Length: 311
Picture 1 (cartoon, rainbow, N blue to C red):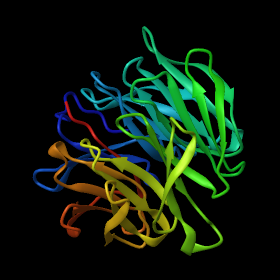
Picture 2: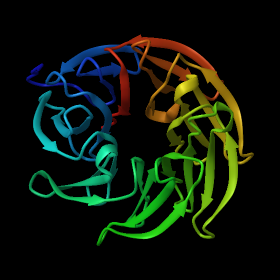
Picture 3: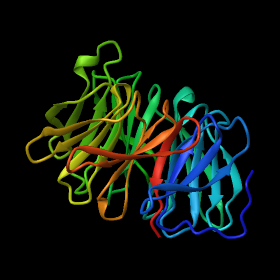
Picture 4: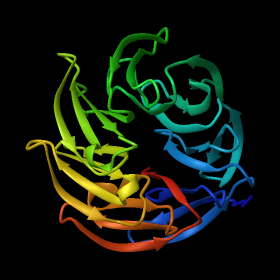
């Protein structure tokens, strides 16, 4: 494991290299990797999240069934927390500093709280094969996508009880609340037919699907821009970054990235999108407004999760 006395991480982009068991740190201004931290072998880092107002990078480790807490100032993993079987996605509530991890093979979510120190406080059962998870921007509410039971659960975060179950017969794999909190974006994956993958827009006030947008196969990551004007979609199995204009409910750019894509991060000012391409071992720099792939950065083997670290 790499050890650094002090690291300049602010403004960098972190990338989880799943097969190499490492984290790459990219300089978005110079468009290059600046350093790399190696984790314990066989852990399989697959998703990342940053604790707001803290120097902690959260690393979901799929093969180790754990959540690693990396101190960004020191460049070392200070704690490894056991979670459920085959953890895949992570969400952080910035208001409460609570972390949620979906465990695909144990049909549960792990709850990690930040009291005097980060610790797992509970593991609660949810639907079958939970995938994407997101925290509501201002309500104590979680949304969880279950690809096997084909439903979305809305769970309140005070007593962790399900307040609503929405049946989605289109194999939901990802969820994302809109910045206003009134729309839930749902990425759906028809794993036997590449032509019918879509993003659903669910009106949470009316409990109805108000629109469907056709996208490429397996919308693995959904990211709304800060102004709420666009939704970026990483269509995993067709290797595209798709840009949805929310006003017109249409795909305005479908950008070929690589053979497969996994995750998306936006830099400061949201000028460029950074997209992980696992089979190429690269992160691609994309001018998403112009619909152009600009550059690429070599990282470790099978880059998966990516996050902009900010301050």
